[in-house]
Image (tube, rainbow, N blue to C red; front, side, top):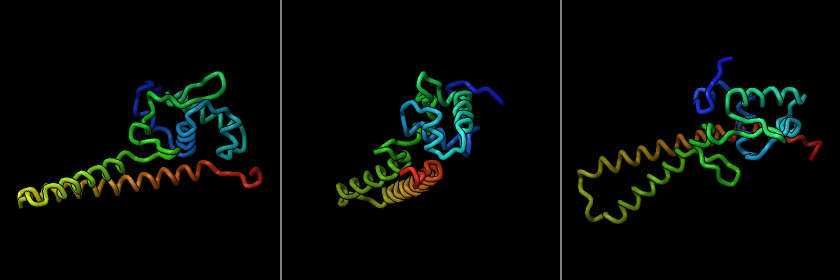
Length: 160
């Protein structure tokens, strides 16, 4: 397997499926996670499966082994560079920027409604279009994060 530097963005492209779900779990937990804890949280059949994925993340520089388990490395945390963690939810930055752009254009139009000229309308239209695209993309990413997390964190009804 190719070795990646700790600051490499390429490492995140290698992981997928289960390893990606393990990485998301580490990110959201934001604390040390043991092998058995991960096994129970993600519904793995054996601790060796959980350890395999944790070791893979360590090898790729996305997690580190600590005295009490494993923890995501914040400096190489590619996902958190594109999301905002809010109340244990990953909110895509695109969604925030889209609503910010929409609000900014709305305030501008409300304040300068009497001074708007025909020349500024294409700019306003393109900013609204860009904001709409960012909002759409942000909601799409948010739904993708939620689906990934739902498939990751299965709750055992018997244990509850």
